[in-house]
Amino acid sequence: MAAPLYRCCVRLRHLTLSVPAASYHARPRVWGLGGVYRPDPSDPETKKWQKGAKYEAKLYGRHGDISGVRPEGLWPSPQKLREIEEEEREWYPSLRQMLDNVEANELEMKRKQQEKERIVAANLAKMPKMVSDWRREKREVKQKQRDEKNRKERLVAIAREKFGVNVDHRSPKFLEMVKELEKEEKKKQKALARRLKEEALASAPTSPVVGNP
Image 1 (cartoon, rainbow, N blue to C red):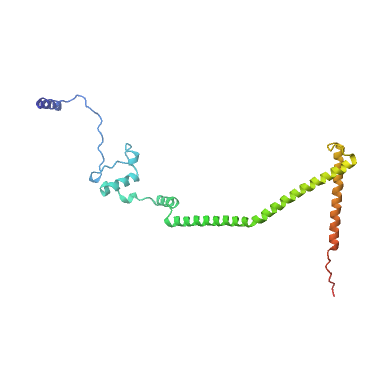
Image 2: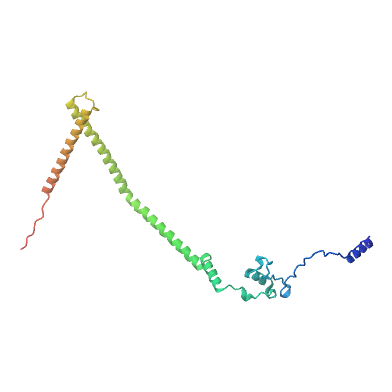
């Protein structure tokens, strides 16, 4: 079984084709020192991710000096270094900065809490007076409503005395009479208030005028 297979392989080895099997021959890989494959950055066939300082740093980190990468060329430029430092200051603050920020936030929260407590305490201190004022205003409103009701009932009674008991309180003549009575009453109240004011001024003690010696 092995002999026929061996003879077949020998014949195939000596068989030559008139046309080459493939016209493309792959370019040999570029090997660096120590047998490390390092793509040529100037070759258009080189992948994008195999170019640049990032890939060079990866090669150097994996193979060290035998990669053929110059480590001094992996350092960022002064401009790039300033950008990295600025980004670190913005997004990665130092421990001292984080502690200062935490302390500042705690102080601000404490200040707001104290201000809120002060406002609550001030409002609680005002609460008895506010309740007293509210009750007093409520009593005054009810008293005014009672006074107004009594006044209208009294005016209606006076008008009915003039027009009769069976007069319709919705008639225009009756309503006009009530308005006239209201005007007269307001005039009397104003005159009374003016007279009381004049009496109060007249009864007030006058300070003696000190003359020049």
